[in-house]
Length: 243
Image (cartoon, rainbow, N blue to C red; front, side):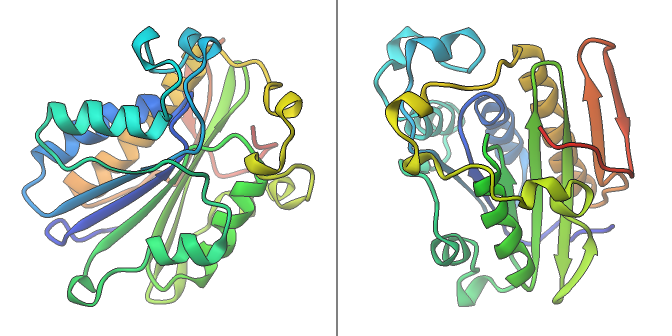
């Protein structure tokens, strides 16, 4: 798949936690080097807690602050870029579609949605908006404790030229969980175990795809699976259970 290397770029990332927090600094650095108009919008309604310091990209000084705000202000400021963030969870298809709509003067904009979420309800939302979009690149990252996958779906001129996550992992479309704001405090505090190496590997795979799209203008690998136990990352065309 080939992509325009000169048009403006807008990236919206849902999730600024385990994986999104490690994607952010590298993406700001990449944007700093691009010689074209860029926007990077971070969205997350969560705040930094003590438990997050083990594997997420935060420190003691960030405790109690919104995750998206912390990352946007820290790294956008470091590279002299504009800090754009939404301190909320995006849980409406209308709102997500609106955020991904190019302004009239930017019709040739390359729009990318990054899903760095930890629940399938949000993935279902991204899937729905993906198929309603005329042009959209949707990169989803998911992982368990030691393994995971990154899948890139692409819509061009109202055609799906690369299938999104749910086409390889149909179980994500099952109604088995809820949006973050629909969880009780007790439910929200429970999460599946993850190792920092899995988050770092997933983040690296996402950044690799973005580099190929934005800098090289070509993406040959639409999906990768990985295991940090076997220290293995490989392209994969057959889906398994999504993490």
